[in-house]
Image 1 (cartoon, rainbow, N blue to C red):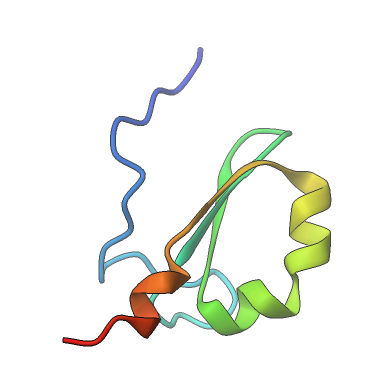
Image 2: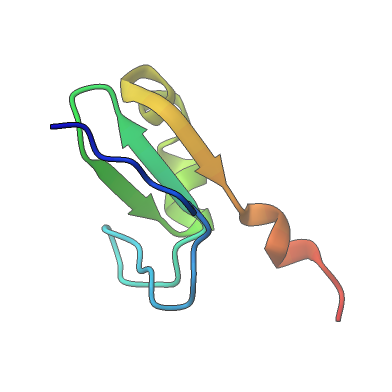
Length: 67
């Protein structure tokens, strides 16, 4: 069975799998499944994530937007 995601946008309800902070990065794994990361943990693990990801949806730019 293949999952189809229509809207990969992250919300305030999406939490980092490492620390529970708001997630700004969704990593789709080549092996299936996905992981969510806050900006801090995404940066800390960026090289390894790139090795195992089929796609990375990055919304860290939202942190730099002025209101």
